[in-house]
View (cartoon, rainbow, N blue to C red):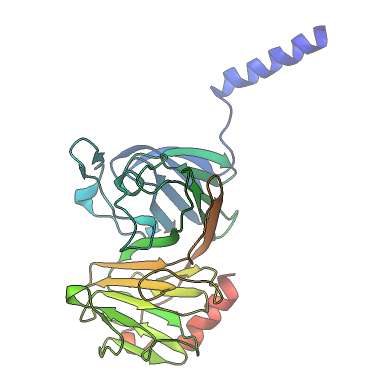
Length: 331
C-alpha cells in the first residue's frame, strides 16, 4: 500500500513539474491562418498544420518553412455560418467526397466545424459531424514520417445512415499557381489526348487542343494556363507531380483500381483545376464505394515535398530526372 502511495505521489510530482502530460513526439497546438489551436505535426525537416474550424483541412505542409498549400489572406479565420448558410473558406489542402454532379450539397462536411485530436507521435485525426445530407461521417487521419516530408493521409467514409451509400474519395488540394503538372501516361487511356477538358455549358471535350497541355516522354504536362481550367485524366499509374516556382516538387501517390467503377462523369482517376498563375488544384479521385449501413470505406494518399529546380522554360522540364527522383525519393 505504501509503495502504491509513493508511486502515485511521484507521478503527481512529475505532472506538476511539467504542468501537464507531455504531447506525443512531434505534435502540438498553435494558432495559424487566423484559427486557434490547430494541430501541428513536425519533424526536423517538415511541418504540417491541420485546421478543423472550417472543414478538415491541411493549412500548412512545408519543407523548411516553404508551404506548398495555397492560402488566401482574405480567407484567414473565416468560418461557415449555418444559420445564414454561407461563409467559410475553402483554401489550403481541402478534400471532399463525390461524385461532383450527383452528390447532395453538404456544407457541414465541406466547411463546417470538425473535431481534431492527436493520435500518436506525429499523428492526428480530424472528424466531421454525422452529415444528414449525405448520410456519412468523414474521418481524416494524418501521419508524418519521423525524418522526411512523407505524409500519409487517409480519408474514411463512414455510413451512418440506414441506406447503402456509393460515394467516392475526391481530393481537392490547392497549391500555389503557375507550376508544371506532370502525370504519367497509361497506354490504355480511354481519352484520345489522354485528358478531357470541361468547357462552358457543362460540356466535356474529348479531343481538346491546347498548346499548354502536351504529352512527352510518357507523361502528360500542363505547362501553363489552359483554355479552360478544369481537366480530367484516367491515368492508372498512381502518382502525379507538381513542379513549383519556389524550387520544390509536390508529389502525390495514390491507389488506382482498373477493375472497379469510377463514378465521376468521365470515370476520372485524376482531375486538375489550373487557374491562371493563381491556383492549381491537385485531385486524385477514388473509385465508387458500395458502403452498407454501419460500414466504411477508406482511401489513402501519400505525399512528399522534394527539392526540384523550376526550369527557365517549362517545356524543357527534364522528365527523366523528375521520374527518377519520384521513383527514388517518393516511396
